[in-house]
Length: 320
Image 1 (cartoon, rainbow, N blue to C red):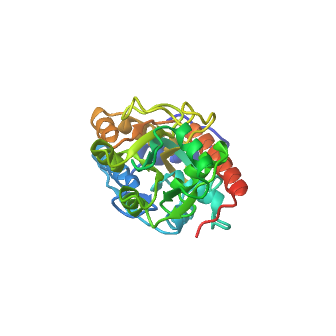
Image 2: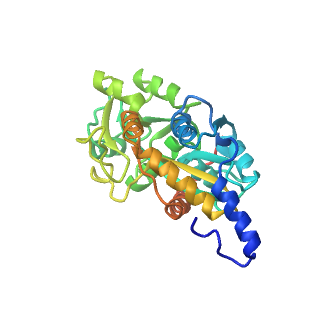
Image 3: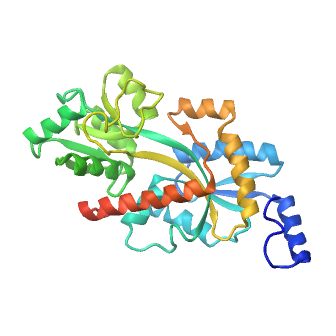
């Protein structure tokens, strides 16, 4: 493999290293998901793990380790041996936690080796039909006309849905009342009931209610329109230039994992997310397959942490 014989460790050691890499994986691989089973992270991780198991003939086991906004699972991976047998799949919450948390037991950039940005998940801005806003510009105008009267829901203080809305408020120069919930599901329930008027949500849970007319989509948060709702404008197109928020799924290993193992993992996972059956299942979920290089994921994570650190400081956001 490329890179096996590079370095100054000597011919014998280089040959041994090459042999170890060539045999990888020789035993089961653990894929840590630092959220509870059943969510989008978990579903995507299990799709990838199943295909890796079939391809390699070695079990790839999904290990859910929820808690502390991904910090518990991430710490397990940061402290694991950098041998390719412990990986993790995280979402944008991992970058946000690096910005919101006052102290983490690891460095979110230095302690992990990027493998691939597997996919991204556009978020949509939805409103209750009783709110007389059919576009972002109308929502902005309404917020200025009715200060303190419009409530927006999130999955909790410091969550991705909270930061997505705070970014919008910051760029649009408006104020809405934040109502944090313990998860997206109860937030969506209260939006449907009209207890709150606005929120960002992933496409799959919102789509049935959009089709039934119980909630109204007014924009997609990503920089580009989404194939799931191609007629829905982006927030930037709808009047807030420069706005872009997209959730994502990235796969990492502990820092120090051999480059040749990182390469092999990258090739395999990119191949999997681009398989027609996996791609089809992801698209139905409102997930856009990507499959980036390790360097691209590294730059993406660093950029996300910079963006969210900036908005957290300006908006005085703290997790609770």
